[in-house]
Amino acid sequence: MTKIIIIMDITKQLTRLSTQLSDLIEDMEYNLEYIDNAELYNEINNNIKSRLENALTHLEIAIDDINDGMYENPPMDEEDSEWD
Image (tube, rainbow, N blue to C red; front, top):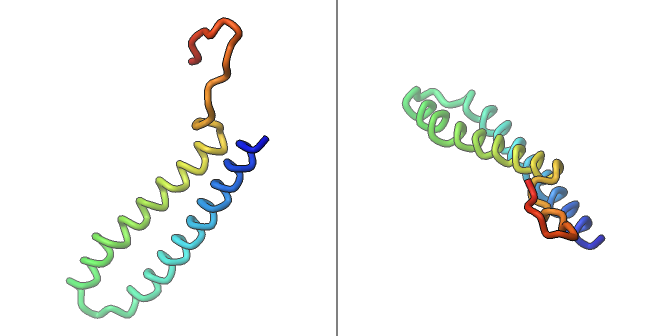
């Protein structure tokens, strides 16, 4: 029972982090609209924004994996057989 609560808490924290990261990306996109220097715009867009979006994607994948039970301990069999 405690393990379920811990997983739910981790999922809740990661979901909150995902929301904050989404907000940050949205704010960055808004601010990018006001950058007149093409070189600076490209630098921020290609090296910062794209990496934040990549981080968000991987965070959402991790949340989905946790919700799907990917990181749960394997069930223990009476015969201790291997778990697939």
